[in-house]
Image 1 (cartoon, helix red, strand yellow):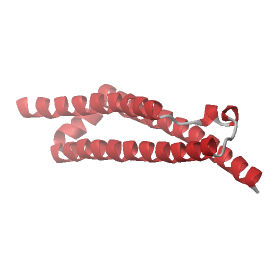
Image 2 (cartoon, rainbow, N blue to C red; image 1 turned 120 degrees about the horizontal axis):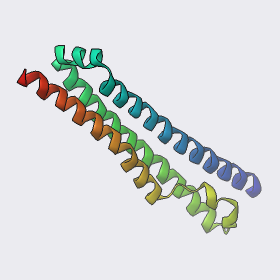
Image 3 (cartoon, one colour; image 1 turned 90 degrees about the vertical axis):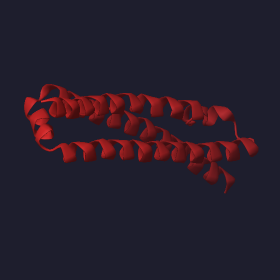
Length: 135
């Protein structure tokens, strides 16, 4: 019975870690695509210039999605920490699960990693708003 629980928890850690990393890089890819599209598409910038209210909503949406993304990251990290604590308290060999642990430091790294393209996108969008108002 205990072996089944340990196997299940280590499998859960593995799944969390895989999805955590895959989700982080997928999200980064989407942000970079958005940034590239806005920077290289005259049509996109012209559309946003004509619809300043939409531009403001996009900025709010980016901020809100980042906040919810970070909340999700730290939620998954806290579950990982709970599993690791249980395994440690039950004296399960650390070598069996150590490489699946989602650390607090790693979660902070991914949160900052995701913040950079968000800031760049928002700066480009704000620059677009300013160019509109100065025209």
